[in-house]
Image (tube, rainbow, N blue to C red; front, side):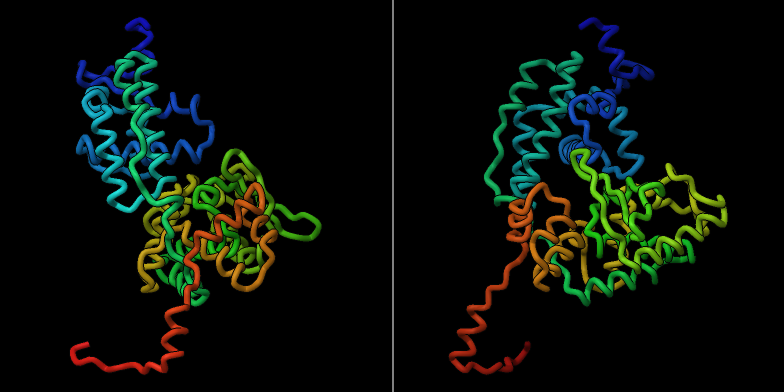
Amino acid sequence: MSELQRRSHATALTGADSLTFNFAALLAGRASSVHTQRAYFRWVDQYLVAVAGLPPTTGDARLRRMSALPVTVLRQSLSAPQLRAWLGQLVAAGHGKQGLSQARAAVTTLASLMAETGWLDDYTSAAMGNVRLPGADEGQRPGRWLSLQQINQLMDAARRIGATENQAVRNYLVVAMLCTMALRREEVSALRWGDVTVQNERVVLLVHGKGRKIGMLDVPKPVVGALAAWNTCISRSERRPAPSSPLIRRLWKGGRISRQGLTPDGIWLIVNNSAEAAGIGHVAPHDLRRSVAGALHEAGVPIDKISRLLRHSNVAVTERYLSRLPQRNEGAVMMSDLLGLDEVEWPGF
């Protein structure tokens, strides 16, 4: 590849040390799913924070970084030993094999694209591709499974932390959709007003899921009410929102509604702040999807209905999903009852 061709994939700023690599533009040819792209950006960002000492980024700042990665830093940071050491750090932090596999794929894809465009030698890229995953627990980390009371506390807190009416309505709508419809945060961020329609006298939502999958979900009445309230808030500034406009919006200071959509990181922040205000500890958006599945399963809802809600490809996937939830193991409690043990008050406890 000629120097001119290589430079078409990079941006020259003020000198050789200021060349940047547009990972975001080239990744689209390898990973068409926006969910995969976002995950790769997150892992590459974490890699460069750990290996190169760059400050962490989120949201638009992360996208800007992925569109202009410093070539000099990449050349110094991309190597098989450094990748192997980083994966070991992820294991120590408790990441499971699924997360490790995605992290490795993100960094090796970056190295491969760098090699294709001539900014990294083929030997280094191939060596990184041969790095094996270190030992780790199977599957995903267990995460949290919230009780129905905790879910209600979270939804109430989402409204309370709103500094303005617009923020309170938006926050409640976001958390209500996560807590009833089991949506992923990326799916909530991608929603448009045109995705909300009425079919056979039912309000339904068109959800753009993983791998370009599309699903239709019935919208519960409380969420319909929250959507109507949010529509009223938006209509005060732009009359009727266009079907192609983002459903969940950013807010300016003072509560004024932006025309830009809220990012998945913004949705994560709403959930995190709501959980903190509710006093229930750290909660991630995917914990809510997990909690919906667990609550329905405990209530005796047939697994095929849970599978349709989660939009899994088949019931077997849902069964594996439910098997990862913290299962009841009451043998020790039963043995204690058989022994007739009483609680003992210990001094100092």
